[in-house]
Image (cartoon, rainbow, N blue to C red):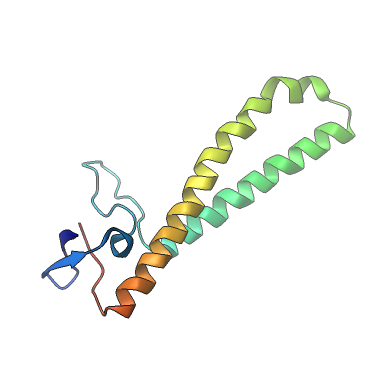
Amino acid sequence: MKHRLAENGDIVSYTDEEYGVRKDDGLGIIKPVNSSGGLLFLSLLMTAMFGLMLYGIVQMAVTDQWGILGEIWWMYLLVLYPLFAGWSGYFRERKAEKLRQARNLPRPVE
């Protein structure tokens, strides 16, 4: 159980599944996105960008530019990590929202 501050100002006990993704700001300058809507938007945006990268691969293959593809293939592997992390964060937060709604719990803010 995690005892966290909720949106309404009360201290509420959440299970790990009900808590969802990390809610604190990590002491950073930019506040992280941790709502399911924001995570969905970012995941869709990253998926669209990855789709454009795949389109680039197809264009390189069609125009017979295998030399370029041989030099940048590792970039596609690097892009897969945030893509999968974004979607897993979205699904984890969405599941947590459903569990919180089932127990009528407010959203944690920290």
